[in-house]
Amino acid sequence: MQKTLHPHLHATTVVCAACGTSFETRSTAGDLTVDTCSSCHPAFTGVERTAVSGSRVERFERRRALAAA
Picture 1 (cartoon, rainbow, N blue to C red):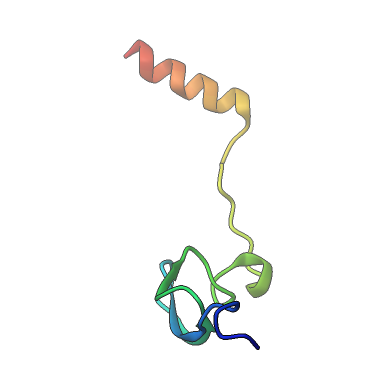
Picture 2 (picture 1 turned 180 degrees about the vertical axis):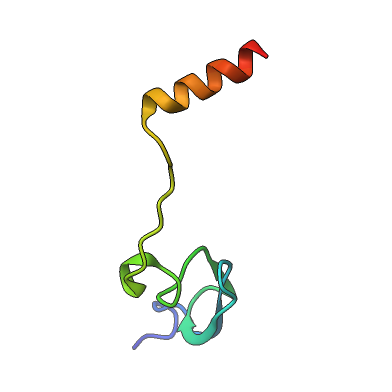
């Protein structure tokens, strides 16, 4: 490898913002913070989270009642 052509790899700590899990890897960037990792992401854990409850009509009615009050 040419020393001037390739970026320098160094040890990097990656920290998950959601669960706090951290691990070491090699990267050209400094320390990284990620939103989700394989420990807490639903695709890897098999735990499905529902983001929205109720139908669109129910949410609209709820917002309209709040606006009228």
